[in-house]
Each structure stands twice: as structure tokens, then as C-alpha cells.
Length: 92
Length: 208
Image (cartoon, rainbow over all chains, first blue to last red; front, side, top):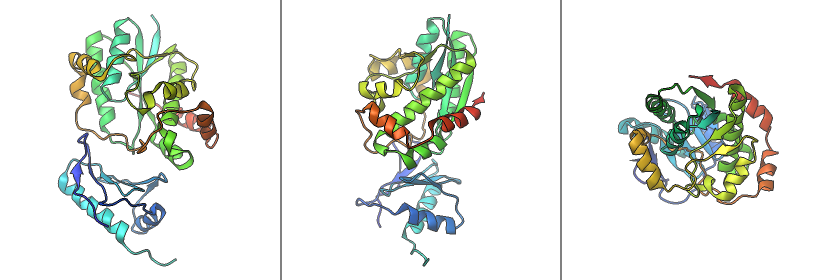
């Protein structure tokens, strides 16, 4: 799954990235992986919020929002989220 | 003069609306619906700075209640039609403000809404939201356009605060409804326990 470049959002309070092509993620699946990786997850059905420093939001349409103005921290969290999305689902 | 409750978001409009009501001599108590985790801490910081500017301008204290709204948003997202999420959200804001009015002995509510400015501010959606409460809602900016509001905000000094970097509400759907039918809205609310949610919100109200 490929993404457009991570960039500061229009209101300047966070970094965000959109997938290159339209997607519909299985958020329940991503949530399961995140929780198995020890992450706390707020599941709002149409989006997941992963609290932390920084907090990260993932929508069903694949949009990733990293709530920081620090570009390097945003990039790290973005990559971590991509890994979660792309990691294979473990059996049962 | 009477006392009102003003909903303050940290945006450009609400401090201008508050200033107009204060200028008429009424007292105001501010209510901020804290939307975290669908936003960050910046809206609350902006509201506090707006109130400081208004307090200095009008020479009186403006108490601020902060009410948790994030959990309500999660409940709405999980259980109701996303398309009308902004209207349902707005109805909870009004009900919360009305509860604070009861606590404060206030007799009206104030908002910075301007007709047609965003999806929740069409006539049909404002009606669907407004009927959730009994108190009158004062909308000093209803006929203003964005440029007029911004010009007033610049005069007040609140514009620079409102436009500082911050995070927009992440709970806004991609395609929010611009028209709504009250029956549909009420049907959506039947899927959740409105009274229990409201009770919890009000119980966690924090006076700053």
C-alpha cells in the first residue's frame, strides 16, 4: 500500500498522509494487530485512535493523521502505522 | 441584565458573538466541549486566550466550563449514521450548554453560528439541532459573512489566537449532511442512551 507524502495539514496542527489510491481498510484487523503489539486503541468504528506521544488516527479510508508538529516524530509514527497496516494477520 | 451561556470552540466566530452579547451588558458563562481525542489541546488553549482578551475588554470575569465530548463522539460514530454526525454532535452540545445554564441560572444560549457557513449551519440542520433544547438561542452573527466576522475578530485581537496552528475536528465526516429531517435525527438518537451520556458529560464538567 503506497501513500502520498506526509505533510502538515491545512490548519498546521498535525501531519497527515493519504493513500495513493482509494482503499477500505479492515479496521478491526488493524486494531487487533495494534493491541497485540501492546498499543492502546480507541475504536470509533470508522477510525482508530492510538493514544501516545504523538497520538495517531487511522481512518477506514486509510488517512493517517499524526498529532504533532515535529516532522521527524510524525515520520516515525507514520512508518510505525504503515507497518501495522501491512503486517500479516496472525492465525486465530 | 440576564446571564447567558456561550459555546466557545476556539474558532474565529464564537469570541465575536460573545463580544456582541457582552457589549449589550449581559453576563456570560463560557462552555467548551472538549473534543479530544478527535482534536488536540489547542482549541482549549485558544478558548482560554479568547476569554482573557474578552475579560480585559469588558472588565469582568468570564467563567469557563470544560465538558468532555470525545467519548460522546465515539458513541455517535459507533452507533449512528455518520452522515448526520455533525447534527447529532451539535444537539449534544446544546443539551450540555442547557444543563450548564440550569446550574448557572442562565436564561439563554449563545453561538457564533452564521447561516450557511458550514454543513451544520444550514437552516434545516440548525433547526434539527435547535429543537433539542428549550432555552432561546442567540446567534448574533447569523447574517454575517466570513469577511465581516474576521474583520471584527481582528479588531478584538481574537483572530490571531483563532488562527494559530491547531488540529481540525477529526470527527467530521467526509460528506456531512447539509439537509436533515428531524424524524431521522430522532431515530438515530434512539440507538443510543442520550440521557445517560448527557448525565456523564455534565458530571465531568470542570470549572476553570
